[in-house]
Amino acid sequence: MDILMLNDAEVRRLLDPEALLDQLSEGFRAQSSGLVDAPKRIGVSVPNTGLLLAMPAYQQSREVTVKLVTLFHENKRLGLPVHQALICLFSPETGTPLSFMDGTYITALRTAGAAALSTRLLARTDARVLAIIGAGVQGHAHLLMLPHARPFSEIRLASRHFAHAEQLATIDARAHAVEVAEEAVRGADVVCLCTNATEPVISLDWLAPGMHITSVGYAPPGGELDRRVIAEARLFVETRQAFEPPPAGCAELAGLDSSLGTELGEVLLGLGQGRQSTDELTVYKAMGHACEDMAAANLVYHRAKQEGVGRSVAL
Image (cartoon, rainbow, N blue to C red; front, side):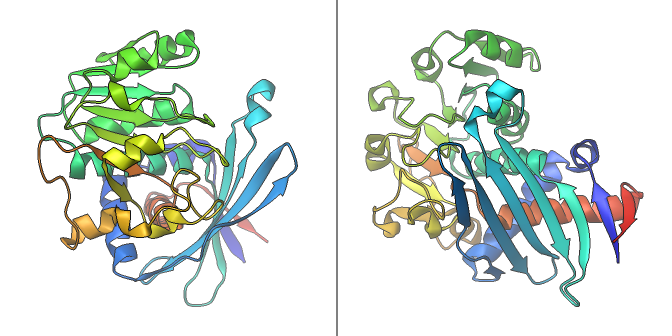
């Protein structure tokens, strides 16, 4: 049994942003068409320390995919990523393991990629000012991915630690750090929440008609997105599993009527309406779905095979 092993550097080289957006679009269409088999996310908790989540998925014409991802917030103090992941691919014909790859960068980029796709679908066409709240892994990934959705001329970065926002701003000439989140949000066209906050990081009164808000933070039992913002906006999700209690869904949406949310795939398929007016406030709340990992990992695997990247290990 020969398995293709791909490390972080190889995954980064192979995961092209535009190709990823195309694959995510295809994946969300398939998900909303009922063509993806992806059970609810399950997890185990290490008390007062962290958790591990398991996310399997299958779609015809793709390899069977499963991601194992851990979430340990105190890793920052150890100089380790808060999220760490491993993705495994299996043959849909025989069930034979085909590839093990680092999933940490895939998790970061596919999450930001889905937020960028929501922006491409839902933000006003004249959106030019982007605000990113959070300067960690997701803040960095959003800074890489969101410019693929709109031609932003100004990007404002805010973080609990101003120095982190300043450091992140150095990778894009359009970006600059601001002292507080409110300064970043007021007057922006698109606002991306990329934190591990357990309570809301923006206020409804900072928002203006026509904004598009994305939120990818996952910190149950709390979260970064205020329900008052959700109540005033049209809500979009990856799947309606987002309304399930964690770990399957989002803490901010748990208990709400799932009919409040429109799936991105439904918008792509023309089965659900996107933005209906220039003044409409739209919100995309991410749960993180296995179809995204499957789309990204399959893209990486097939490019690796084509380009001869990685090493084959016999088990």
